[in-house]
Amino acid sequence: MKIGFVQFCPIFGKKEENLERVEKLIRKEEADLLVLPELFNTGYVFANKEELRSLAEKLPEGETSRFLLELSRQKKTSLVFGIAEKAKNKLYNSAVLLTPEGVKGVYRKLHLFDQEKFLFDPGENEPEVFDGGRVKIGMMICFDWRFPEVSRVLALKGAEIICHPSNLVLSYAQEAMRTRSLENRVFTITCNRIGEEDRAKRKLSFTGKSQIIEPEGKILFRASQDKEEVGVVEIDPFSARDKKLTENNYIFDDRRPEFYKRLLTK
Image (cartoon, rainbow, N blue to C red; front, side, top):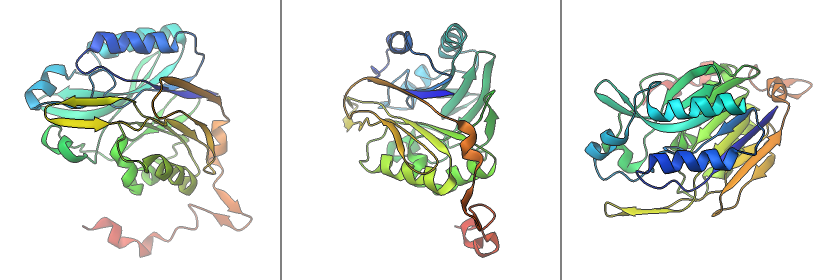
């Protein structure tokens, strides 16, 4: 199975241009699964909630979903992408799993970072694992990396690949995701963006370095900090089913949750 990421620099508010850029970047790529950045079609630094609402879309009928569905069918490629989702009266920072058959799953970001708290509604459901055809796929978004519970829940539910659309600005997030792979023995795909956004009296620089990590924490591919790159590697996704560490240790069977009750309280 071939999996990968599409690292690029979205232009704020220019949906059509961002979609065309993604199409151009993957035109010659062959992959079974590609991950795009968080909020890849709109950019990240919204001036206010009204601006966010004007750029958010409903799922699955929005223009971005329809465009990517056609692209997915043409390429015979599944896509995970980050989008501002409009649902009833709420606005979510969401990740979507899209296959040539349509939308297979949506995850709404649980852990909102900094100014996101004043723009988005936090997700309300436990992370789920979705059928990606040949593989079980979980999703988390950007700042979720800081909370190991997210990837652990996904791994316990059977995720073999965890897709991580991101707009990372902290320098150590990529290394933390190596640990998320290692402690759960799963593949992770972090797709970060590059470039800067300087608007609404805020300036953010994004760290790039999108990466694919295998279940023992090895970096299979890591992109540069500041260049557009499509990274694709071939893997055996079923190796993520092997949770055996030694002849006598299975990482999930050895857990002792009766002593972890503090995790369920604030």
